[in-house]
Structure formats: C-alpha cells, structure tokens
Length: 94
Image (cartoon, rainbow, N blue to C red):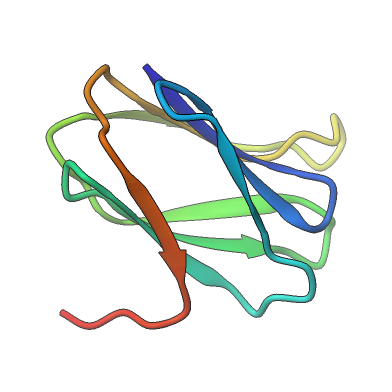
C-alpha cells in the first residue's frame, strides 16, 4: 500500500511500499507520476492545505480523501500494493 499527502508547507510525503519526500517549498505546483500510470497535480493552496488533483488514474489508484481547512489536514491519495516508483516534476505533456 502507498499513501501520498503533504506535510508542513514544503514537503510532499510518500509512505508505505516507498518511503520518501519531495521538498517543494514555494512551488507553484508539481506533477507526480506513478508506475501504475496515475498522475497527480500537487499544490499547497492559499488556505495552507496540500491539494492533490487526479489528472489520470492508474490501475493501482485506490482513493482520495479531501483535506479539511478547519481540521488542518491535507488531501490524502491511497494506492493498492504494487507501486514501484514515483517521480515529481514541473513539466507534463499528454
């Protein structure tokens, strides 16, 4: 299993089968691509919440839990077992 969420104002956290983080301080938004074909757009919004927009769903994508400003929680993306890699960057093309 794999979970993607944000931490503070500068980190995208990857936890589970892969454990890592992407330092994204002062970013205008970034794309995350996963080995199953899932693509997310990640942005720290004006309310102080990490938001993940699903651009494409792969076969291991499981669910999204929306963050809550009042509870000070970030969006959470869940994957089934089997994600082999994830990359983070600025550019995306279809």
